[in-house]
Amino acid sequence: MPPPPDSLVAALARAVTGRLGHALGPRLERRLDALLAEASDLVWTLDARGRITYASPAAGRLAGLDPAVMRGLPLASLLPAEHRQTFEQLLRHVVGGDAGDRWTCQVPSARGETFEFEFVIRDARHDAAVRGLVVTGRDVTERNVVAARLRFEALHDPLTGLPNRALLVERVNAALIAADGRRRQSFAVAYLDLDGFKAVNDVLGHSAGDTLLKLVADRIIQTLRIPEPGRPTGPIRGPRRGPPADTLARVGGDEFVALLHHVDHPAGALRAAERVQAALSDPFEIGGRDVHVAASVGVSIGPGAYTAADDMVRDADIAMYRAKRSGDGRVRLFDQPMHEAMAARLRLENDLRAAIERDQFTLHFQPIFPAGRRGVQGFEALVRWQHPERGLLTPDEFLASAEDTRLILPLGRWILREACRQLRRWLDAVPSLPANVLSVNLSALEILQPDAIASLQQVLADTGVPPRLLRLELTESLAVRDPDVAIAFCRAVRALGMSVGVDDFGAGHCSLSHLRRLGVDYVKVDRTLLDEAVQDAAARGILRATAMVAEALDLDVVFQGIERREHLVMVAGFPRSFLQGYLLSRPVPEVDTWRWLRTPPAGEEVQHGHR
Ligand code: C2E
Ligand code: MG
Image (cartoon, rainbow, N blue to C red):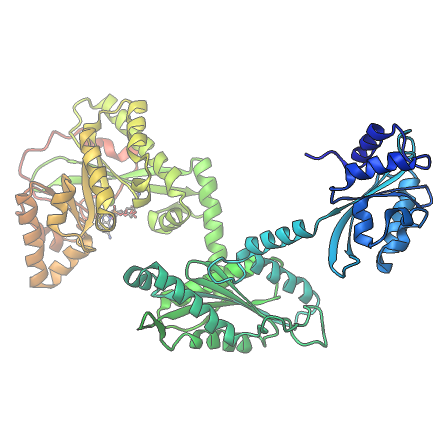
């Protein structure tokens, strides 16, 4: 760290003379000059009225004057006219006892260049070595250039050179402020996501993907009011100088956001967004190939009730998501129903968070029966939310939201712990509990956590439950989407002594041979397969084949959703099968589980459906 400028001068002065100022003799002044000769900082000492008593060689070089000639001149007279007043004011403050502020001004050199200097004035009149005011000026031209470059980099996307999200948000906020009180002057935020970009990246490689993004940016810019570089644009508040320039930002891999000024609400905004979309309809030529992309676009319109740019961008994003999901390629406007759906979702999210803290969840248990034999094989734990206002909620009312918000992770931990506590209670009363007596569902997100197995072990250790009592159900979709994770998980779970099965088999694309690779103990057939089998002979064949292959693979089969006698008829006589469904029993609270646990163990042939 260089010493602060005033002490530098004072120290030099002391070193050279022991005294600086009016009495500085020519010989000593030369020595000070020699010491400061190479310094790029400008140094002056002034008397209390601002007249120069000493000027350093660099100060002389900048002004193109001999430092000796400068002596006696008011320093203000050497500054550009527009800065004189500021300087004199600062000087008065310092003389009046204030600490000197930093002050930046542009100074033309004698050779016609312009430099940016940061000046500091210090009062060193009390210092016997100086007895005056010390003004130092540091050339910050370079520093400012670097700062400007850093600011540019912080606010722009390196690939396309477009503004990034931070700059977009800055500009949308500026538009909101400018529109304040002028609600009729609308502007729009259009959120655009390319459809099919990933395929380009995967098939043609990343550099083709990069090229495509740049070409897309160029095409979109053509449809916006963005002037050529160098052409001035109207300020946002300029009523008569035309609308301000639109902004196109790249905010993610294949996501762009345009800020469109002065649009008619809502038709004009939609037209502008459609123009953007249409611009991408012609193919792009990349590496001699025609590449087609489309874009889903969502639009939000300001100012409306918006007060924050983030909200406007988020709403355009939600509308874009709707456009994408509808798959019809239309531009979507963020509207009231979307707003309400989002508000409801936010409420649910907040409620969920609070519910986890307030312990509002409970487990219900649906018995699973071995086909053709008495007693229960076990239960499936199914989570319920005792909502303070809405009553008992089933998972279809909150689970998707818990997964989207990752709240399923704390909720899942609670479920597993509660399931083990339940096992503990049963075990204390019924020491001869059958193996695999309780099945617990796990969401894909839980299994994808790197510590999934470790936290399972922790729960087992904490509750002292023998692992053989527990079964875990994975979703079929995880088994298909992330087979490696699923295989590793199944292996680890079985090594710990638990059993594991695939849920909702037949709803997706999981094959029986895939199950074998997974290494699971049982498979739960999806309810829709049973319904189809009732209707259709071919589906009945599939159901039967599933049961046979499962047996050949040494897997148990659980038929769930046994709702009607026809379902029961469909599965009658299948080997190694188990039954679960409303016809046999709905999920029940803990108190109702005891009667099954205390019935004699399975063994006898029975007719199901008479419970
Ligand atoms: P699932 O794992 O397939 O669970 C079976 C669902 O089918 C349960 O719904 C059950 O009440 C219902 N069900 C049982 N028998 C019948 C029947 O005969 N007819 C009909 N129509 N439905 C029947 P529930 O409790 O609403 O759970 C729905 C889904 O939510 C579960 O499907 C499971 O995927 C998930 N889920 C439930 N509890 C948990 C949990 O603790 N953790 C996780 N991760 N997911 C859970
Ligand atoms: Mg299940």
